[in-house]
Length: 152
Image (tube, rainbow, N blue to C red):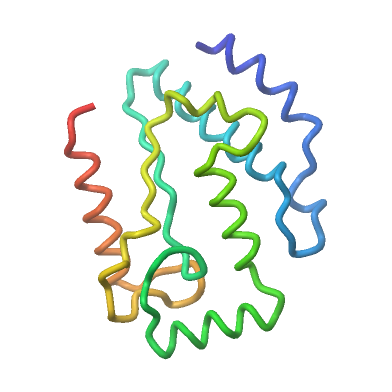
């Protein structure tokens, strides 16, 4: 398994670092780097007999949540300041559709999307566009626990 990891690392050396990206826009390479990180973590876990689960986290700009007034304000403030909505939407779309060069790496990675976890939540769950309050954390924890309880 570790031999497979060694084959991936040389590919990653040519990727730009996040610090090299100065404008707020979607970069397809970011999905490839993320996928390599997920794959690496899953291989390391396998080598130690640890079950690996990957979760796509919910974000205010992605998913079907009905926003409260405060969440709508956060969303609008973020959008007016050149925020990350398009970046997040494109990133998640590319990831979920496996629209990137090394998508085959993730075929055996146990991935679960939490993008719909707030679809029935009418109360406020976000404190900003990506961080959750106690209620939001509770809903995410319950959704993750349901997945963890399932047999592999």
